[in-house]
Image (cartoon, rainbow, N blue to C red):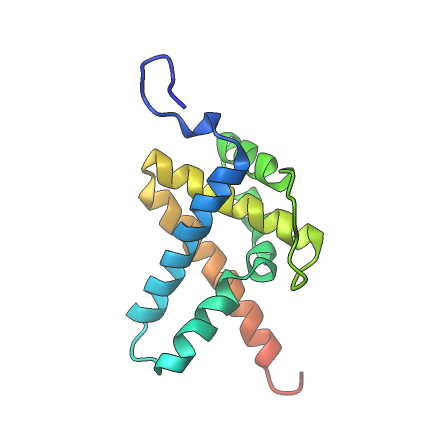
Amino acid sequence: MLNRNGEFDPKGLSPVPLAFLGDGVFELMVRERIVRGGSVPGQSLQRLAVRRVKASAQALAYDAVFNESSIEERSILKRGRNASLSTIPRSCTPEQYHKATAIEALFGYLYLKGEEARLRELFELIDTLIAKTEEERNAPGR
């Protein structure tokens, strides 16, 4: 979508293509984090990535991301959350899937705007929340 100045404006895109792109951006950031974390056995790489990329994990961070977002970012999150989706995986609830779609739409939007620093800031917030949740689930006595 072009704005009045003839420049590409991702705000004009619907949330589904933004989420499509954002899914790839988020997954790449997760994979980069895993690889930079040190040597991991090959069979564990995909399992580690899936735990952080799955919709239920992303949905955990929706409220925190929303609270840390600008008005413009909140608008994208709301549009992503309210997107009409044709299918919802059995691995999560509809609410989780809509929240994950919102996160992905925001990541796609920020990527297209070239806001890498903001992407990394939000990724850190999400990754920290997901890691904390995993630690709590794996704590002894649970």
